Image 1 (cartoon, rainbow, N blue to C red):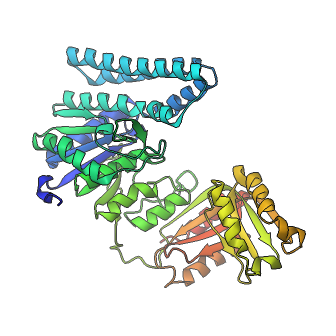
Image 2: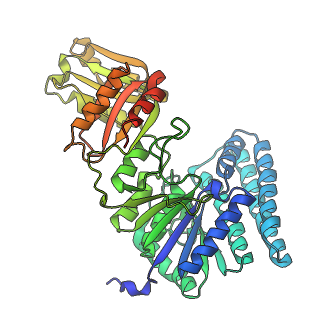
Image 3: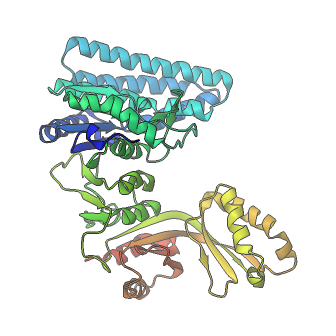
Length: 476
C-alpha cells in the first residue's frame, strides 16, 4: 500500500538550468542569484542542472575519436573543461578549503574521463554503456560547481548525482525511468534534505540501473529528469530556465517581431517540439502532464519576465486563434502511386512497417482519397535507404505494373501552424492557404486532423522562410 503523500513536503518547486544558463561565470552567477532569491520565497526548492554549454558534445566527440584511435581530442577536451570549471570555481568560491577540494574533485573526474578514453582507444570500440558514462560527465562536473556557488552565497546546498535518484532500465542512450523506484529514492534521499532546509542540486540527463550502472535519458534528458524528479517529489511546479523568454510565436532569428506565448497547452508544446521548435521535448512534458504539475519556461538572463506557462487544459479562450508557426527542415517527399495501392493487400501498411522497422522516422502520412498514392516526407539522410526498402517490399507490384512509380521530390520543409480548435474552425485553414496562395507559394502537400491543434504544410525549402513570415502575419 502506498504511503500517504504527506511524507512529501508541500509546495515543492523543481527548477532546471540548461547549459547556457550555467556555461559562463556571468550565467552561473545569474542562476545562483535566482536560486537564492527563489529559496527565500519557496521553502522546498530542488535544482537540476545540465552540463555547461558545449561540454557534452565535446565529451562525446572525444570518445568517438578515441574509438577511432585518436586520443588527442580527449586530451584537448580535458584541458578545456579543466580551465572552464576552474575559472568558475575561482570566481564563485571564496573558502580556500572548499576551493581546493572542488578543484581536486574536478581534476579527478576529468582524469577518470581521460583513462576511460584511453581504454576505449585500446579496445577500438565505443559501447552504448561506455558512451553513457562519458556523456554524463558534464553534469557531474557542473553540479559540484553550482552547488558550491550556492553555498558561497550563503544557502546550504548539496550536490547529488541523479544516478542515486532516477532508477532506469538498461536501455543505454535512451533509458526509461522506473517511476515507483525513483519515487522511493526521492523520499529517502531528497526529502530529508528539504526538511533540513538544504537545497539539493541534482545532475540532469543521467540515471542508473538498479545495479548502479550509469544510463542517460536521451534527447531532452535534462528537462526530462527535472520532470521525473518533480513527479517523484509530488512537486507543485517545474520551472525550466534557459536562454530564451519562454516559447516564442516563431523563430526570432527568422521573424524578429516574434512574441512570447504566455500560455500553451501540453499538446500544443508537444506538437511544436515534434515539428522543429526548440522547446521542451514531448517526453519531458508528459510526466508533468500526467500528474497535473504546472510547468514554466523562463529566461535566466531576464528572470523578471513571466515566460511561458504550460497547462494541462487550455485555460485561455483561444480556440481558432493561430498561436505559433514553426518548421522542420530537410526532407524529400517519397511518393508511391499506382492502382496496386488499392488492391486490398495492405500495401500502405507494408510500406510503413518496413520503413519504421528500418529505424526511419515518419513524421507525416499523406494518402490520396482514392487510396492510389501514398506520400511520405522522409529526412534527406534516409531517402536512399527508404527507396531501397520500397523497391524490395514492392518488387512484385512493380514487376506487375501495379505500382507505377516511386517518385522523389526536391528538398522540402514541413511548416507547422499551431492553432487550437482547428476542427471547429476550418476557416483558419482556408485563411492560411489563401494567404500563402496570394503570395505565390506552391504547397506540395497538406495534413491536418490527427491533432486538433496543428496544421502541417509541406513546401519547397527555398520558400520556407518567407512562408513562415507570411503565416506569422495572421497571428493576433
